[in-house]
Length: 97
Ligand SMILES: [Zn+2]
Image (tube, rainbow, N blue to C red; front, top):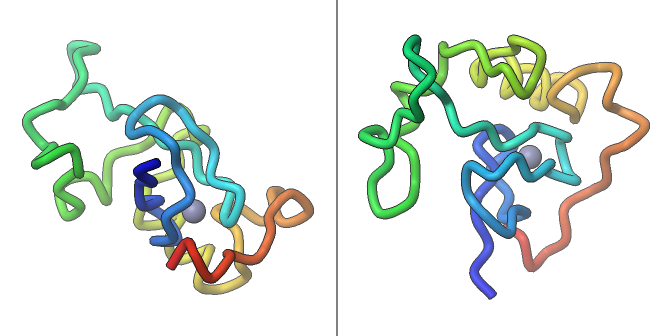
């Protein structure tokens, strides 16, 4: 089964893209990224994968307004997209790299 790369930690942990799957490694919720009119920003997706640079600074509703850039920094610093999520995360499996 195809696995999708988590936008925050980069491991292949997601069964779908933009379906609000929660990554077990960093606890980022895979948001669909709606524009200001409430429509999904589908133009940012190429071959089913989002164009990262454009997503980095959009506050994610599914992640309590956290931006992807901040979540990535948090993951680098302490291993979860937010400090409160630390008890829920696990280490990535080698098959997810
Ligand atoms: Zn992740």
